[in-house]
Amino acid sequence: MTFSDKIKELRKEKGVSQDIASKKMNMAISSLRNYENGRLPDTEQLRKIQQYYNVPYEYLLNDDCTTKDYNNMQVSKELGLSDEAISNLKKFQMLKVENSKLNNNIASTIDLINNMLENIDLLGFLNSYISINNCVDNYDTNHINNSLNNLIEDFLENSDIDFSNKKINILNTKEILKTSILNMFTNELDKLSNK
Image 1 (tube, rainbow, N blue to C red):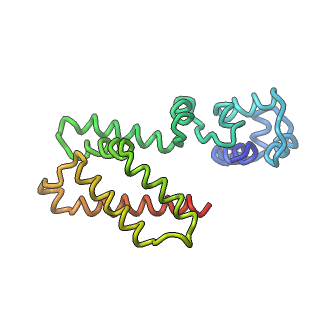
Image 2 (cartoon, rainbow, N blue to C red):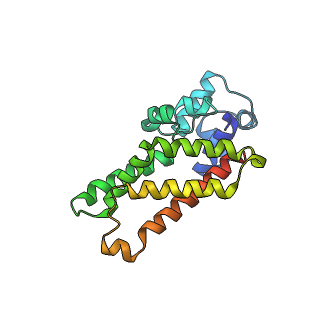
């Protein structure tokens, strides 16, 4: 996302007009319009924008930077995760801590995520899926989807979740999880491959 796209989005997130935003930043409305239309500001104007929206300079100036949160900057730089992804991982970690005393299977969610991120076969397959999916004429959809299904089945079998638990069996949790993960992966990977 470009600088101009980012500052337009930030202004809309704040729910203010160009007129109000420019007044709050002590700049001419014509300047703000120019910045939102693609012109880059000088250092002083950039400082005003950065302070008003309270985001890192790197977010404003680096088209590839997706994090607006100072606390997430290092993780985002190293792993390319968005603020929302980092926030969700933090929420799952808190869930695990809160539920570990109850010996609840919800606590296994973070272990499931860790296992997914640690599983080099799964990550390698996802990378291959994206590459293959970019060459639509050269792959068999059923074969790819069956392979992904089998990989996730094996992955869930080796996870820390106790699928023999009565409550989990009654809810058919394993199938629900497998279907959810498959849908999430195929939807996201199809989006990526269609870019």
